[in-house]
Length: 87
Image 1 (cartoon, one colour):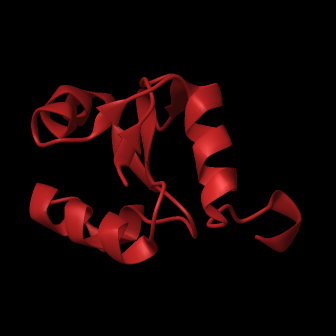
Image 2: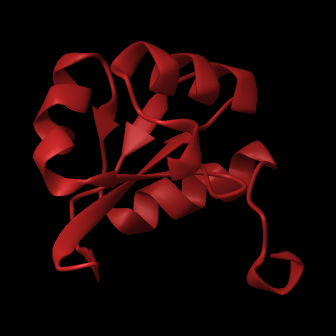
């Protein structure tokens, strides 16, 4: 059971973003995000969008850094992935 974060690769609003997910439960994800001070508005059905400047701090707080493919693979395996068609 882990909270995972991918590299800040996703451009939007003039900055790069990472995704923060849990491979176990949304409860674990929400608790980690709250403890890290990530606002609830950053949640998007199965992940939080977090700006690049928070990436290293999230890792320091215990998020496991993984590449994007590993993040998606583990999110799917957890059963928490929300497909694009269901968004």
